[in-house]
Picture 1 (cartoon, rainbow, N blue to C red):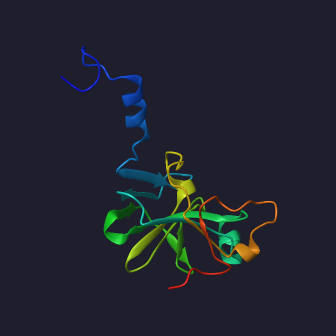
Picture 2: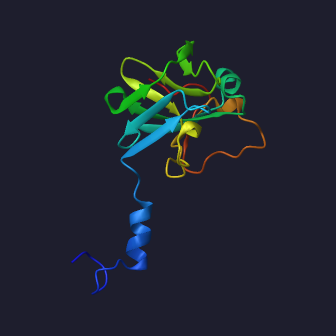
Length: 147
């Protein structure tokens, strides 16, 4: 009999706890669905960047991203790449950047809201908009994170 009550059903607390477990696989895609990707397991790190390049490529005040080892990333569909950042050539959605070792995913491209992926650091805070507060508990870097 599964854990829970005597009839095998889960208690409300167990059900909530089960819902709060992070998924082992996350799936994402561009706006039109032509480019799809997946990442497995937890992100190595999650951050926000306020640099000029990230602002321009995202069309927003910052970019919210997660980084996974390359072996836990897969994609399908044709992408175009500019300055190392890949996007869908059909709809223009920015989806990821891939290096020899890692895949940096634009977390807004995930199918499910990435609420469990809290940024642990912020980059280029000297360019952060004054009306944006720092993420509580996140490391703060004036520019790039030291190597």
